[in-house]
Image (cartoon, rainbow, N blue to C red; front, side, top):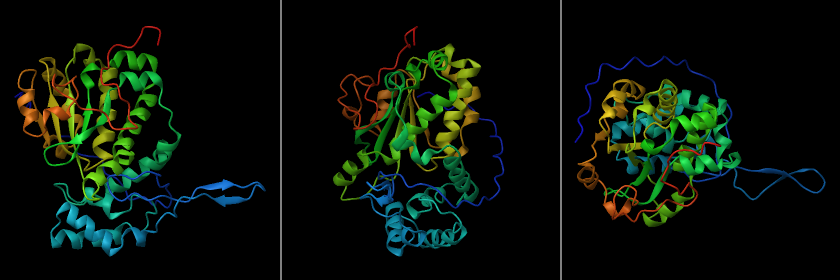
Length: 337
């Protein structure tokens, strides 16, 4: 196993002031929790507003109903003290009218090592509104090059705990080519869409059918570094990676159960000296590291290898869930892209 490089004390997180948030759209797809639909307003033949067939968006009181809190407590095995704390949080967030003000979502900010992070939750809501993330699932059109050359998706099947697996192959991504072909904001938008698909995609319904109606709670991330090279150390690549990590770990808190970093080459140690500071401390504690020669043994502790695709293990039969990019090969972008 590649040992976790010695980490200096992480920089203190920025202080976040409370914000007053009173709007926010409700995605139309289910998610790692209890997703609901909202009304869609359309025009009838006389140009009058008419409501389509979607269900009304639930109120805060409906989302925080006792039965929902009970389901959350059971799903996360919360103690009675944590249950009481979750109920108290409802009042703290009463000013936030947004679909993520929901016990299925808020619990992720409660179960970390630092307890409930209200400022982080409010910052996440503000980010979603500022970046129009709530409409991303409906409006985003995936550029063909990004669909082919950014291998990142949820896999069919589960880890040994019954939780979903998310595979991302950063080592075979052509960071230089991607930044030559697209602005960094475009790449960040695409990565955000991938993260949204991981928590709101159609695959959630298939998972629930196979698990007695229970939604997935967390995912195991397999982060493949095969192909990592000195080109990934360029400042512009590290800047992109830093923004991706900050979004993933601070805007999707509690999503990752563990992160298994596999096939880390020697150059990884040099990159890690910088990259370790991009992660929240709680994320670092959930990492498992492996190199090119012991990664199979590490993976087998958590995952049946057949669930993984053949680009990871030769005998793998894994497939990508419906609705996410199916290519896992990555590679160098064409020169004329």
